[in-house]
Length: 314
Image (cartoon, rainbow, N blue to C red; front, side):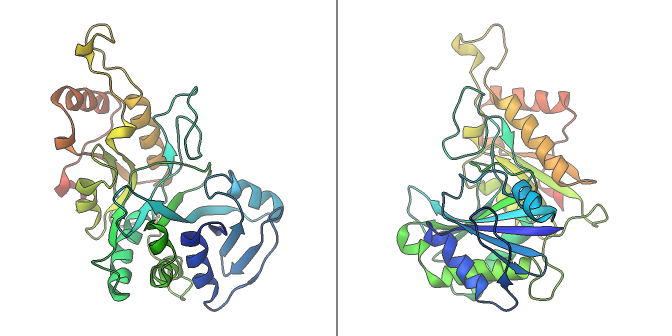
């Protein structure tokens, strides 16, 4: 089993951390994947391609076909953009589970799909806060989760690690060094056991499935920052399209939209990524209107998806 770290040469916030990581000991050239060079260090394979980070689908399957090595997780290094332009270091799962088949994903992936959430997301967020502080990046940089969004298509547990939010920060060497250290320690390349290794024998098995709230999931993040909490998919409000039954679009009290699809797909992808874990939905209650909350709670009960409050995760 090997781990893929994926970078693109056309993104300063991607190639910067990749270059900093490759400057650390133990790397040597590996095989090419089509025209993509690779670098090998223990059980980690770093790929550097020349396309958009969300444009290269199925890199895990393609690597296995070429090398015979089975990929058990993928970590993408990327830039983050935000209207606020605030400097940030972010981690998040991927997918566009709310889109319908006739919609084109704006940034990769496939409609109605969510990738398997990498179990490292929660533990790495907490480690990233420590590393960022040690590099004197905080409080200038915000350290945060993001909701599930964009592609590319991957078949194994996946996460994005990003630097935001403008070119000035994408090129920051201290931020690149911090991300490189996160990957170095997080994957155990420093000789340790790695951070965020999931198995069914873990003492704490509660996994948060975030439902509702803004893109940066502050209510969910308050929980995830506590030691021992695992995190799966995070569905921000925009990923839960809900049609108001009182607006005449639907018959009776049916709440239309793809919100049910999004929740089910995200739950299944989270459950698959954490075999033996107990997935609990955590709602950002204040972000919903009463009719939305009622509809969601009813659907979760129908699907036998347990709901947890903050204290239930500790």
